[in-house]
Structures are given as C-alpha cells and as structure tokens.
Length: 241
Image (tube, rainbow, N blue to C red; front, side, top):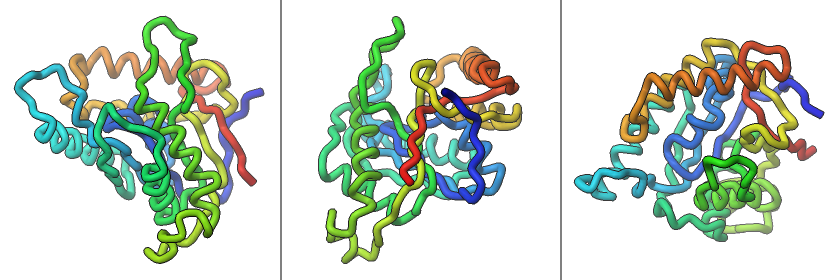
C-alpha cells in the first residue's frame, strides 16, 4: 500500500549517501520541497568522491576538491543547512564500525526527524544498472547508525564525551526507483526545477545537461502519476515510533 507524505511537526531531515551527486539524482526534489517549507536539511557525504572521472589528467586530490565544491554549490541551490563530509575513500566504502560511529555522530549533532538513505541491498530488477557497492555500504551504515547506535547511550559512549546525546530518528526513507515503494512524496514544479539546477551544479559528472534535466523531470512526472500528482518521488518508508 502506498501513501502520500503528510508529516505534521517534522522540520528536520538528514540525507546520508556515498558520493557527491547521489542525493541530487535520488531525492533532491523532496529536499528542495522541505527546504522551501522551512525545514532544516543536512547532507552527510560518506566518501570523498575521488574516483568518479574518466579524465586521465585529473588527480584524485584535484577531484576531491572539485566534487566538494560542486556539492556545496548544489546545497546552496537547494537551501541546505549544512553538508558534512566524512571523507572516506571513494570506491572502497565499507559499512564499518567507524563509519557507523561517524554517521551516528551526525545524527546526534543534527537530530533529524526523517533520514533518507540508499538501499543497502543490491537490486537487479532493471537491465541497465547493477548498483554501486558504496551506495549499499552507505545505506547499511546509515540504517545501523539510526538503529540502534544513535539511539543508545551505551553504544559509542565516546560520543557522549564529545557532547553528543542520543537521538531517536522518527522515520527512515529509502530511495527507491520503481520497486517496493511505500511512500510517495508529492512535489511542485518548483521543487523539480530546483532539483534539476542542483544536479547541474555537478559539472564534472553531467555530460549532457539538457538530456539529464529532461530525464529528471520525466522520471518525477511518471512517479507523480501513480498518486495523481504533477510530480513525486518514491521511497520505502519505515516509522520507528
């Protein structure tokens, strides 16, 4: 059963993803909507984005700075409160205890009502994409941070010494692209256009701006039709009580 998003009382959200541009592709229209409505939204980027290029003349060190600045620019377009960079090496991400602790620290710092992340399970339902291992690792670490690490004061007690009290995330939304959607978030055209502009800030990753924007708009229009809305994004949602 699917439902449209109605969240009275919610005003803080966090998005945990592996790379710069992951959130722009997956949930940025929802983020644009929340920022437009006055929510405090924070991104947590797990990796440094140091591998995503075909250009043999760009070093990993250069790419780290390029993609960091692109993500900051995208965040400014969306209206984010902050972008946190955890700095793990791109391409080698694992759902380690260190990563879980670092995400838990950010959850305790920013205290989101809703946390969006990526699917921790490889999905092979399509025919053109087999999944990035960093995406799965980020999703698994984020879910493990939400429950139970960020919630329990006896997990990573050193975070208490740093001044970060436990926090209970109220909902987790997993980015989904067609299968197993349980939550549709209806969007306005302005949200979609803002998300397209944010994606276009990632100039090192977007080779055809016009086609990418057209694809982003159409995908959200197709999802919106499922609930009788102009545009929407779909998620698998978990209410944690």
